[in-house]
Length: 239
Image (cartoon, rainbow, N blue to C red; front, side):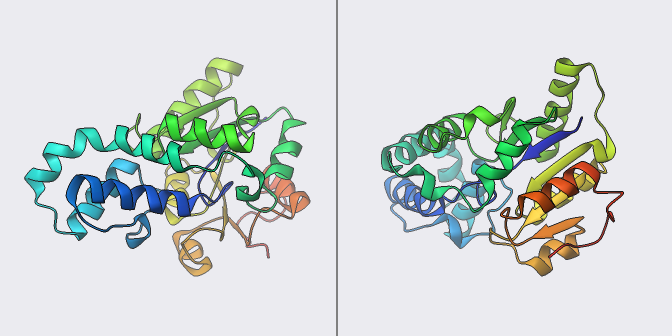
């Protein structure tokens, strides 16, 4: 049995255009500025971190940002949910994601989610995609200090559910950014990374990812890495 922790955005789903538009509306409303999430290196960061970094890039006075910061997240959730397409959610699921989750659902592995998004945004995304049923628990960037803290929470939850202490390569982190890799290395976890996000294969490889895939379409190969990654050649990059 393994603890498998998925990232959400650009790993399983692609709603970046919605995030970009929600960010544009948010910054126009609060600061009368044009800003988009994709103007910064956002992958693997919490929304609060992203807004702080984007505000600095746009030269929002720190005291003004601080004054309005406590209202940003709640308003962002509202805007995102308002503009999120309520139909055709399947087209926003990235290649191979559902097939892999279907295969994992047939195993004894514990599958959980960590994300920089808020609980409200994740619930909205799961309503339109139907992916929520695959996860035993979910951990949010608005409720934890960073990704490492979310992994610690997932490990504790997994022990509560099974009585087993998950450590080392019994933990599998699947994401799309160098920050997923960096987080995984803190726990000596097995890191599986896809290049469906905004970090290149070169960046991900240099960060020390154990396995790098173009996407999740090769279900059999990804499952092999999850099940017997070390025996199958841990540390070797698969095409």
